Each structure stands twice: as structure tokens, then as C-alpha cells.
Amino acid sequence: MSEFSRPAAIEEPRLTTGHRARRRLPRHIIVVLPLDLAGLIALSVSGNALRPFERITTIEARMASKSDFFKDPEVRRLLLEHGIRVDIHRLGSRGIATQSLKGMDVVFPSGQPAAKLILNREDHSVKSARPFVTPLVLATFRDYAETLERAGVAHAQQPGSGGKTLYYDLDVRKFIGLLNGMDDDARTAGEAKDASGDGKGATVDTWNGIGYGDTGRSNSGRVLVRTSSVCESNSAGTYLSILAFVKDGNRTPGTRHTNTVIRLLMDTMRKEDVVVDADLTTGRLVLNRALAESLRDGPEPGKAPLSAVMSEFVSVTGRFTAHRTDSGDVVLRARYGSGEPSAHVKITCAGSEGRGEFRNEDYYTGEFQARCLGKVRTWISGTGELTLDPIAIFR
Image 1 (tube, rainbow, N blue to C red):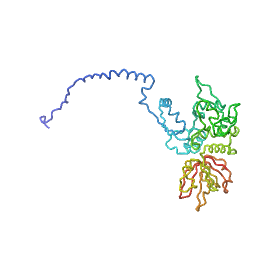
Image 2: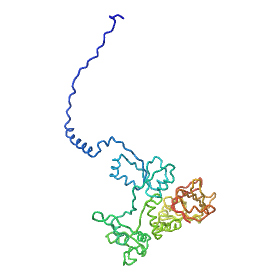
Image 3: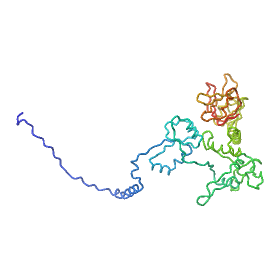
Image 4: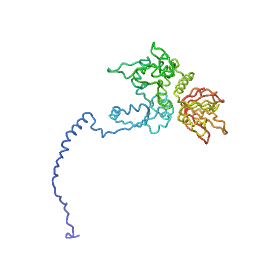
């Protein structure tokens, strides 16, 4: 190639330079800027300046009453300081113990029995801890608490910082005397019995009967405690256990004293008219007032199926047979009705609950008379099977 045909070198282009005009801050930004700087200084001093950039670990947790603690704003703030956020899935303690825990990082049942069920049924290694212990508390209005104090059933604790106390110690033995609906030693010393004048009868303890009327208000209703479901809640089960313990002379009832617990439970439930009695051997169903009213205009006057009792507690008496499944569960069946093919009531007791009475092999050799307090879960017409979720079973 000749020198005349060689292309000339291309010089890099030059760009015109300039200076960026300095923008003035709008007046409203100038006004706010000192506040922003003050906030930045405060965050720096408290160690939170980099909080938005820190990694937050979210923990999926299933818990019962302790969820109120973890929802407290101060607790949430302290956890966030350590990079932890707790996503709460609320469920009763027994529900936690019996339902799937898939996707959960932490479970927080409210009692030791539910915790043991969880530890026993988990295949992989599970770490357990007991961060704190909480007392069992009955909540009421001050007038009722002071009425119990005047009746000698409760005793005020010393307030922490002056003023009126928020907490009282309850004498459970005397309190049971009020729950049983009878005039007894729960009244204040020297007070004449049958002095309630509440129109409920001479032997019935009512709020007016123990002095609530002295507050200037009136309540002729019986002294009651309302709890969450004993089927789902640890606190309800614990409360019932305390009553049974005191009723049995400050001794653990155990399997030999089961009737003490059942009698106390059944007496209370019948006084509240919240239980229905069914005798499978006679075919008789004794309704409470609420169920009788709802079935009054039913298709068959004077007759009702057990499946109509789904919203109520039911005490079922019958002749049962028992067999143990491969998983260790115990299944009870009792003939239900006189039709053919026959219908049955089915009750399943989880093996993990360790019901001691079913260790006796005599249960598996024939029929036995038993009573079950529970709730109807479902009726399956295809198999003629009514499933009952048990609370207590005794012979």
C-alpha cells in the first residue's frame, strides 16, 4: 500500500467542559434539615443508626396465652434490638401438642403436659427451655374481689407502690364452698346461714348472698368461674386440677381418685346446664335447656340424634369394647341405637396421652360399662359412626 493511500490518523474528539451549577436547597428543606440532623445524632447515640440495614431474623412461632407477652410493644422492641422478629400463630396448648408443627421454628405451649406431648411425638431432636413461669390468675372487677375478701375467701396482697392492690390470694378450699352452690363455712365468721335473701333458696351461695349487695349493686347470680375450653386450654385444665387437688385433701387424685375430678367437673357443668346426658343402653337423651329449645320444633318431637349435640358437652354412658391400634392409640366403640346394621360411637384415646387405665388387659377381652364426657365431632352416615372427642373416661 502506498503512502498516499494510507488513511490519516483519527484524533480523539474533544468535548466542551463546563461547571455544574450549584443548586440552592429549597427553604423548606433548610428548615427541616436541623431536625433531620438531630434525629441522626439521636440514632447514632442510641446505636440504632444502622438499624434499617441490619438483618432481621423472623421466627415462626406457635403459642397460646404467652402470645400476649410477645405482642407487648416493649418486648417487640427488645427483640428487634437483637435482630429478632416473632411471627405469632396463636393456638391453644393442646392444639399445639396435637396438630402439625410443619413450618414452625418455635412452639410455646403454656404447660408441661402439652410440652411433654410435643417432645414425645417429634422424631428429630428438639431443644426445650423454660424461660419463665407464670401464675394462674382469675380476673374480675374490684367490687367482686373485695366481696370475696370480706367473705374470707380472698386476701389482699400488699401493693407494690401504695394505693389499692391489684392482686389477691385465693383460698381455694373456701372458694370451692362457693362454687358448690351451698351455704357453708365460706361465709364470714359469725354470720348467720341462709341470710342471703336473694330469692334463690336458703342453701344457695350467690354474689348477693356473700355480701355483694353491700357495694350498692346487685347480682343474684351464683358465684362462677368461666374459663377457656378445657379441651384446648392448659390454663383451664390447670384450674380444674387445682380444684381436684384441694377437693381430694391436697392430694393428687391420680387414676385411683379419678371420680373426685369427674364428680367436681360434672357437678359444676350440670349446675351451669351445659352438659347433655346420653345413655346408649336405654336410648335416652337428657337435654339441657338450650338444646331443648333449639330442637323444640324438630321433625320428630321427643326424639333427637346424638349429632344434634355438637355444640354442647355430652356425657355418654354405654357398653364399650376396646382395642389398641398399631400406633398405640386405644379405640373404644359402643353400640348406638337398635337398627341393623348397627351404628356405633367411636372414641379414640391417643397413646401419647398415656391413659393408665388402659394398661389393664381386661379392657380388651370383652364389653365393659363406661362413661365418657366429651364433645361430638362428626357423624358419618356411610359407616354409621359417631366420633366423640373425649375429655374424661371412667368406669
